[in-house]
Amino acid sequence: MALAVEEGYRPVERGWWESGEGMRFLEKRGRDPRFDQAVDKKLLQIAQQGNVVLDSWTMPWLLKKGFKIWLESSAKKRAERISGRDKISFKEALEALKRKERQTKVIYKKMYGFNLGDDYAPFNFILDTDILNEEEVFQISCMVLESLVL
Image 1 (cartoon, rainbow, N blue to C red):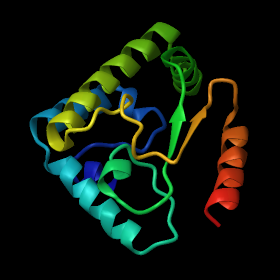
Image 2: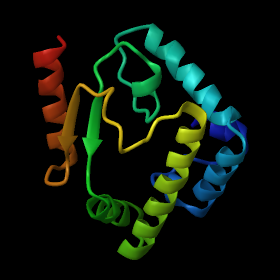
Image 3: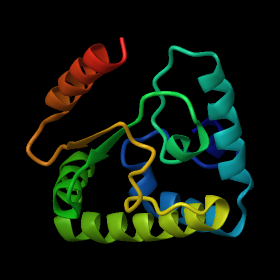
Image 4: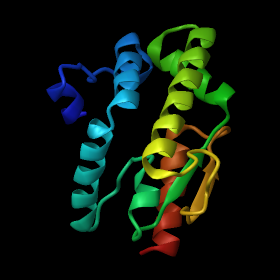
């Protein structure tokens, strides 16, 4: 987020990535990989410190160490969540979600060669979150980490 702010964007509100400004930023990222490369470099530095939790679509492929969890959810459920969070229609949320995912997949395939959302090879655990709320996802993730990592 800090790097987006440095670029003149305002990604401080929830739902910014699905907003018009977020979509324009995504298009810029598709033309210029420097932002993504800088973010990934910074995340790799943070990961090297150890004892951290990262939320990243690229780190599972770029970082060889660590325990990696993929949170799975249907497009319908994610659009419902975005719609409620951002107070927009389900249709708007679904369209923004599909556009964002399509463009993001192209960016990462071009930059790193992996298929986001199709290649689960780097993951140690996959959790379907469709029927879970935020607290349940958190609790299950903690239980898995406590049982398998700690």
